[in-house]
Image (cartoon, rainbow, N blue to C red; front, side, top):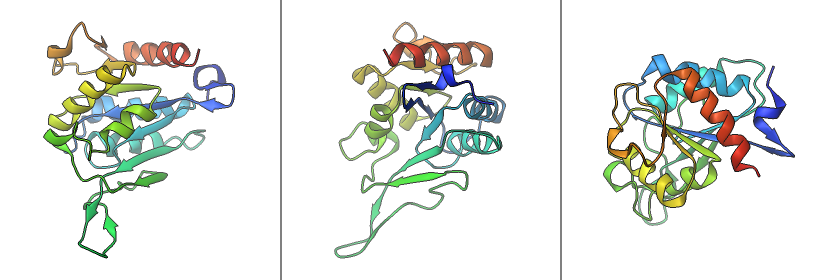
Length: 189
């Protein structure tokens, strides 16, 4: 059963963005993180694709009594003049409850460009949890720092050491859970 104190403040349910690799699932941390977020009553926000995004959403979706939604903000590909904008193959993953389609095509190393959905992900979250990933994840980390969105670096093998001291970090799931609870409470004041 979700803990109303950890996820709901007033009428606003906390939104936690989980960012990370679009190809590697990092199942040992992504799936239990998604399950915990669901049990605690948070909304899960991601880019809606594969890898960490799908694995976290799968964990989230596996909790039948969840109160929140798995939300994906999708990139868009223009098909040509007068043609509809579509999401790339693999978007949304099958565990997304609410897909927010955009016209924003840039990802990866172009993730900080104005035409990237990464801005929407970071600005829509009450807190961001960065799992291991590549250039797209790096751009989201940098946006979270620029926009002052609470950020947790959760890369047990030190993948985000370059950002040490600029954001909180966790070495294990229990530390990540404690940080998310504290960040959610602090952000709502």
